[in-house]
Image 1: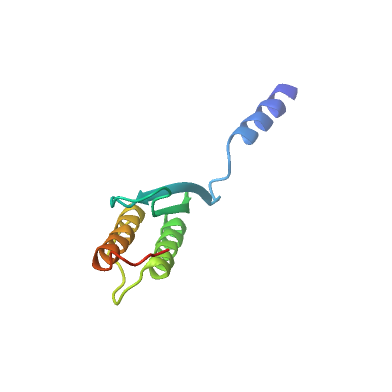
Image 2 (image 1 turned 90 degrees about the vertical axis):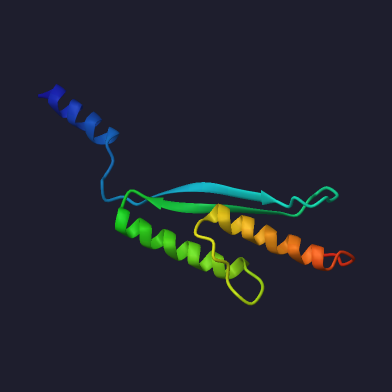
Length: 108
């Protein structure tokens, strides 16, 4: 009987609840390709990605992406990127276009 209880406790402590939402952080970094002095313009995002509960996680992840997309764009139209890496690439692309259009101005 002692072994059964001990085994059950160990098994229970090793497994986790299946109704638990888990967040894992992912980093996305893009740096300008234009010649620059150090430090070069860079965008760095550390995003909590929801996992484990597919419907809830998908809803949270889409909302976080939507809000971040609205926060970091500048210009007349929002970016059309569909993932975070694309979002950072488009953002740096906007910076590079602005820098090329106005080479004598300082940004940042």
